[in-house]
Length: 534
Image 1 (tube, helix red, strand yellow):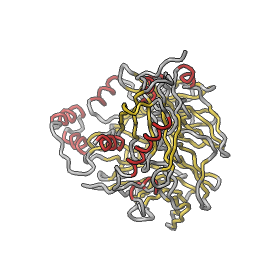
Image 2 (cartoon, one colour):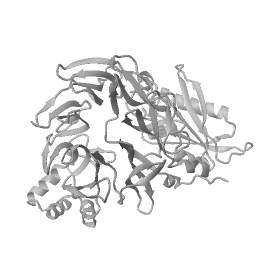
Image 3 (cartoon, helix red, strand yellow):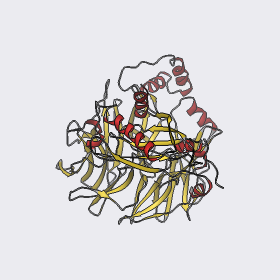
Image 4 (cartoon, helix red, strand yellow):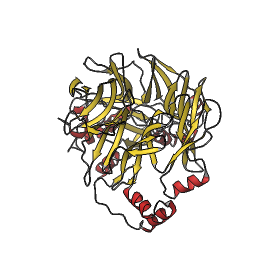
């Protein structure tokens, strides 16, 4: 007899992410729940015969780089380093792991490194969190960290907020803080951007001679639109290479030494949530050619799940053999998508349904971390013709051990003639003659989506005797710009879609008790919960 899904069910999963390969070896970060410490333990692994072989001893390895025959990764392995970081000192210690032998400290930086991109074993470009208040305190203390941190503690009774945004999810107060770009060259660290510029989406040129990134430079109010920047690593010359003013630049990849394929969102018709157009950009001539004018394909996976972790620092776009590839959400699944450098609409690579959380290019296709049905994340190989094969067996045992409910799909046409898709999880121990209370769960965004993949929170409710209802109303991702556009209309057609979905569920599944209905949701789902109740 299978076991019941409990509130701590997520502790059983092994969470792979940040997959990379070198020759015949596949590496990745693996995470496990540590309930005693209220955290996820994270280490570097290698895939062997479908199983995970651990390569690092610590529990805080969350990123790495393959450099020559070695692996570089940041970690805090000594008690004094962990204590310093907990006290507020920005500190990153890099270790070097050879093909055979133990990892040894390579170098340390008094900075909170985020993403890093190695040129060779002594040079790399990286982003780091820059706080001018900490920098000033260190200068005042003449380089003495203990004294600087004590001074910061004395100033912690209040915070001056004088810019927007001053706070971000997962970061807390961000006022005057920036993600800056730096160049590490054999122990020397050179800042490549200034104190007002926030950097994201770094891409190294094929010859490692320059870096392209998107940036927001502001003093008091950040604009939604960013800029496309290029810095020469030899001369440190920084240039704005944005081909279009007042646009937001997303995914990008080199097609050759002089040409980029990139996503550009100008908000021409649907504002900030508009799906991007895809362009080819010849850098020497500044010539911009539209390959796909946008409308249908978003950048990345937007299908929700609470049993996946992390992601890669590497940009999720690739160019090869006259085509470009990226991950996108279509309907209630996410796919690898393929487009031609000659133009035309992209199309899904293969017919596999599920959730592609991340991908990594290999010579004959891609490795992906994906979710399918009620299974947890596994590593798959996807060939260039779309064929898919599962390579790992991390979480398959959970399917045969625990009683997960299979979602039942329902659909209907809304007031605009658009099909609306949703699902009902029956109670885990459904008795046909009984009536059960139901919970309506509304996703955030609203430009995200639900799918028929495993969602622990909802499976737990089903295990507790509830029917669970969830759908993708107007405003959701995966159906194109026009469907997703509900600017200024929250609580109108989206609300009526959700109510019609509940009515359809009541008509379809007589085990749902219409007199015992609850509603919940996060972010936009929280707004809609208040709207429904109020």
